[in-house]
Length: 118
Image (tube, rainbow, N blue to C red; front, side, top):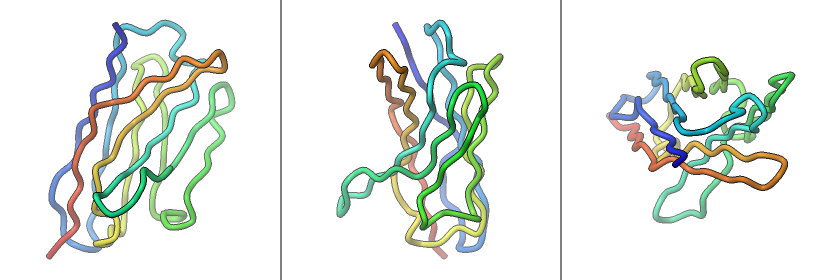
C-alpha cells in the first residue's frame, strides 16, 4: 500500500515562509518517479505548482511561484519538499504532493492546508 504523507502546512503572514514535506512509504523505486506539488482552492481547479524529474532532478514551476518556491527531493528518504518564500494571500490553498511513474503509476497525498493571512 503506497502512502504519501504531507506535513508543514499552517497559517503564515504575507511575506513569510513555509516548508512543506511529503514522505512516501510502501513504494519501491522512489527515485524513478517524477514528483509534483499541486494546489487547489474551492474557487479554482487543481493547479500544478512545481515538478522535479527523476535522475537529473530538473525542476519546473508555475509562473505564479517562480522565484519564490523551490522544489527538492531526497530519494534515500523518499521525500519531496517545497520551500515557499515571500508568501502571498493568493498562495492560500490545500497543497497536494503527487508521484507518477513512466509506466502510469500515480499516487496522491491527502493534502496539507496553507493559509496566508495577516
